[in-house]
Image 1 (spheres, one colour):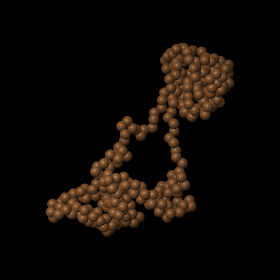
Image 2 (spheres, rainbow, N blue to C red):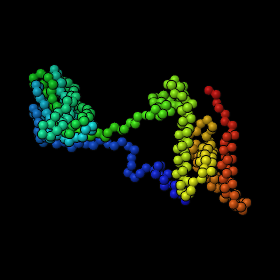
Image 3 (cartoon, rainbow, N blue to C red):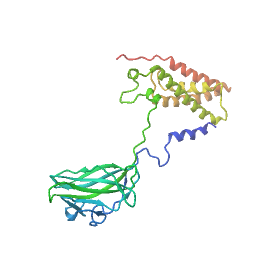
Length: 321
């Protein structure tokens, strides 16, 4: 019956099929004619087409001319409030007196859409070679759609800026950051300070001894819940000998795993658990075959308590710094 607890533990240890701890990837947003290979299709504004052989992608590009050159994608792309987008495009600018800029314009409403103000991103001025620019934008609270826009702000008459290879991706939402409670902040103060650091905690106004007591109590409560989950496979719960069932094997296992009374690591826990369970499983069988008497429970108690006594009586030498 003890094996019934194994599937429960495996649920917390093994990953689910198809589950990955990697953050979700960005999702490309389909654009109509992003490389201008279809001419002006999908765009409006004051621009002109240039020779595909002179474009960044070799399929087509548009040119804005000062003053007043603009372009704008069409139709609008549906969005949800709070979504984060990354816009990248290739550009080259011969503008010296003004600035060539691009942005995402978020809209709200259907019949007469409201247009939100958004920051314009400058591209390098007086740059005759194609270069890639990237910027991120977040949809406002009431946004329902978005369009890609570009312009020449100022500039001398006849100065030009070319645009090509538009790419828009929808970024995954940032991970939710849970605020620390007052107790959590007291047990583990935030910041880059290496822990444990009782001096820093004491200087921050934290009662170190009280937090140690609270931490031990909380870890004991979690251990108690764990032993209840383990013993449910027996069909009953031992109320009298339960504390010995929970505490003694745990202490014996971690100490037999080469942990000291001052320091213990996860590696000590893993090694100690394997050794403890191995000794506890094999010793009664060996003793019973020699004595020809069922002394399994007695042997278990002697072995577990004996390992604790052995571990606690070891002399640990501490090197002086």
